[in-house]
Each structure stands twice: as structure tokens, then as C-alpha cells.
Image: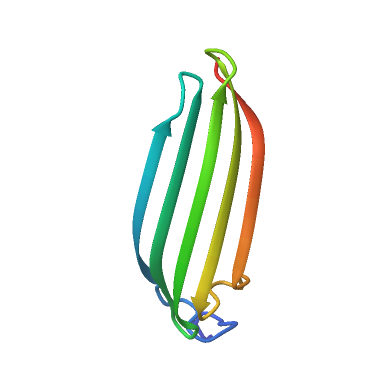
Amino acid sequence: TDSTPESNGAGAGLANGGMFATLGWTHILSEAVTATSGLQVGNLWQPGNGISTNISANISVTYAINETLKSYAQYSHTQIIGASQFGQPPSHDIATIGLHKSF
């Protein structure tokens, strides 16, 4: 019998790699409101697909309703330049709002 693993694409079974740099900033606007932003830039390598540069930026605002309940809003944008990694579109945006309860 053949013990070679099946492959559905070039580079299957080979390692992926990458290197990123991240910068973050948090600012306390008041006793109840905190703003946070971040930037991440890096390169990803996928065998058979090439190298891409990924740039992600995000911003969020958190409001402490009380000691155990916080509301938040967050926005994130990612841009991929070069080879598409793992079938991702060249750019995408995510907006999130929610509540966080601590017990």
C-alpha cells in the first residue's frame, strides 16, 4: 500500500510562517470610559500561495455601567496585500457591540 498522505493543493502538509509587529494604545477618557486602539502589520507565508502583507487596525470604546457590567463598541479593518491567505478576501471589516458581565 502507498503510505503517502493525499494532497488537495500545492504545499499541503508544509509549514506556514509569519512575522508581525503590534502597537497598542489605551486612553482612560473618564472614570467610566476607556478607548483602545491598535495596529498590527506583518507578513504571512503559505507554501504554494506566496507571501502577503497583512495590515489590521482596530479601535474600541468601553463604558463601565457599574462595577460588574460594561458595554463596548469595537471596529476592526484588515487589508491583505499580495497573495490571499487561506481563502480570505483582500479586505474585511468587523464591527461589534455588546455587554460584558463579570460575576
